[in-house]
Image 1 (cartoon, rainbow, N blue to C red):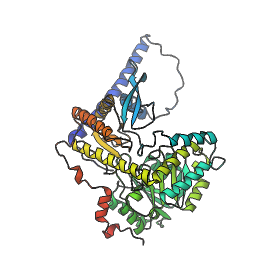
Image 2 (image 1 turned 180 degrees about the horizontal axis):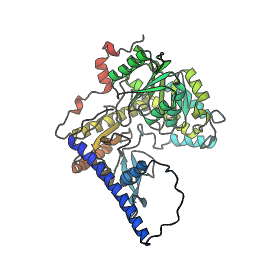
Image 3 (image 1 turned 90 degrees about the horizontal axis):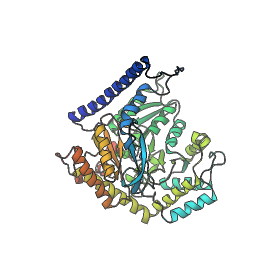
Image 4 (image 1 turned 180 degrees about the vertical axis):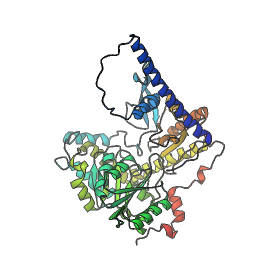
Length: 511
């Protein structure tokens, strides 16, 4: 796992916070049981009818954690909005109900906040002009849903157009589109990798990749996040030792990585991975959920970002829920692979087909991105916004992780009680952001995650910086204030690759 610098004081406070919450939670439960038994013996409280006790549906500690830990801070999570997820949003105000443990109620008020939590990278969630007209026409000609799988009568003309357009956009032979991004990974990997295959997965891969790998009959091994030396070691050991028990060679070895890691904001070192792929004759599967449309000169994702050949990546996966402002996901690869997925994928056989209106939204977004005058302008603005915000936060003393050019900017806070107060104070000042903690991260890696959009203006970003500066000063979360670094000297992943591209160890020339 990736380890981030953390002081001994931070570690102690984090474990003390969790320890106090858990201990007092158990003491509270014990006190309630003792009091209930005592009063029932005295006859002051009716015990009620005895009923047959079944096995609990959830794990006891899981239920305890939800009640005593998550319940205390769930006002900073699952925040409902009453507007489109644009640069500014209307957040529905909630408050804890008096005399009711961890229960929230709506106050009937809304608050205008700067949106730094949505994956609206290219700003397509704001309805404007021709977007509305085309989608309304599609709704009139088709319907809100197909009410059928694609293998029955659910493959609309819009879906056929979309799959051709996606294949053209990512420069692959063919593509298949699904109605859900999570299902795209979790139902496709089991078909691609089966028995006698090996999946080598980055340890920080998304849950959909993890479930897809586990659902397959393939053997799964993990390498340290973005660590190419460890990846090569895992590949070499797998080739030398072969399959478990038999020692036979693997039928195929599939390396599975992401373009941009959503919790770390780091861009995959793709040139080095392709070099290893070619050296050891492996296959490569890339999840571009957060990179497609968000990076690259032509917005075509991480392959475009490094100016590499798409044929060097065997399978490109992406979602439409981020840069395209819609729903669903796609797999792009050679035609024979896509034909197999169309025929056998559970998402094709059992899941409802992608809505024609949602497909139309993606088509409009793709046309805009592929128009150089519009697409280049949006992705350039996104890059400028991302780097401006990251550099400004570094200058303010916040510990940001991830790479330059990435629209995902995590800020480490560490302590769970501090992050709750940090989020509440930011919301009170008109800034809505995402708080992430255990179990989504390691116990001590609690963080704020900012997602930048090309729809943000410089004044919007300055507002976010000023609010975080004030709140961070009050809560003492500006950990690098004394040891400032010059953000202008931080190299982007592409610049690092450019310095090393003559290194024979990462040669990506065709064998």
